[in-house]
Every structure is written in structure tokens, then in C-alpha cells.
Image (tube, rainbow, N blue to C red):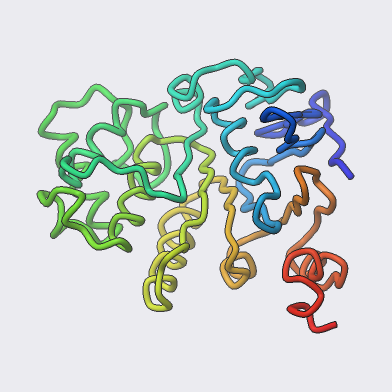
Length: 265
């Protein structure tokens, strides 16, 4: 199935239209169409190899589709480079963190401000780029404080714990000022305490401040807590979309996600 895309009446924030991505003989994304609306939280779920991260890479310019188009606020972004997509207002995190080990936590945030697209949520922390270095340093410190990392501001990233590195990656994405955040596996590798902390940051410091979010996540507790709408991918195809309760109660999807034994059948 595909979500009907109508960009004529009340255009969505993002429209993915019949996107296909092949890697050699493997079709990772197969004719996917979906829309993302401003101010909502979306979950992108499915078993390993379903094409979730590939779809994120297509939406952010890290990959180009073989066919199909992607629009952000009715502007075609299919062929744009990642830095151009960020400047328009779409930023992402990565499952494997992708921090710079020798760079201080503060400098990660300072660098992200250079891509900022304008005034955003979280008040004065996100003023348009162009303030003095001193002012931007204070903004970065304030943001690190919001995410519980102010005491680690002058530590290099490789000295942070793995949960702290995950939080830093999220804070860096927020610092771009992007309106849409694509968050890839934010709780992978975290223990229960760190999971709860990451969930709280997403809910209280990202979603509650008006960001539109799409999250790839295998932990369904996070999907239940955060998401308004869920897309279910399988073998690169969008096979279901609906509210969290609608998706999670479907036995056929549970069997795909967990296997028949894991689904209780």
C-alpha cells in the first residue's frame, strides 16, 4: 500500500512520491509514497532490512533514488546534497552516532549552528546565525544544559559515555534549527535507565517544543510513548500505515516484525 500524496490541497511538510532505490540487484525501497505533516511525530518501523534507514538517507540527500521524487514544503529536494537539505529544514541523526571523537561537545553544537535555517523552537537558544562567537558559545552551552551535558561541554566526544554520545548527536541535530528531525535508532545500545532518559529528551526537549519528528526505532515502548502515526515497511515496501494502536494490534504485522513464535501464535 501507499499513502495518497496530494500536494495541491494543503501541501504536507514532506511528500515522498513513488520512490525506488536499488543497490545492484537488491531493491531496498520499492515504490514508496508517504506524507509527513507539520507538528506530528511519526514512527518508521519494520524488521531488519526493511529499508527504513535507506529511506532516511533518501529524504536527506545522502542517497539519490533510482526513480520517484521527494518534496519538502512543495520544493523538490530529490537531487539536493545533504547540507542543502539541512539548510532547508531537514536534519537527521544516525544509528552509529557519527560524532567527531577529538572534537569537544561544545564544538559539535557550535558547528551545527552554522547550518541553522532561522528562528526555531526553544526560544532564544535558536536565534538566526550571525550573532557573535561569544553569544553563540553561550547558546551552545545553554543547549547542552537542556540536554544534561553542560558539565561535559569542554570534554572531547570520545571521553563521553555511549549514552552521552547519543544525546550529543541528538542535541547537535536540534541545534541545526531544522523543523523536521529524522531520528535513527535513538535508543539502540542503551540500558533501561538511559532509554528512559533518551525518551524524556525526545518528548520534553524536542517534541514538546514543536519539532516535527520521524523516528526509526525497534523499541516499541518508545513508539507507543511518542508517535501519532506509524509507517510499516517490509522488504522495502510500505505495507501499512495508521495510528500506533492500529498498527500494534495487527497480528499479521506482529508476525512479520517478531516472527510467528515471537508474536504469540
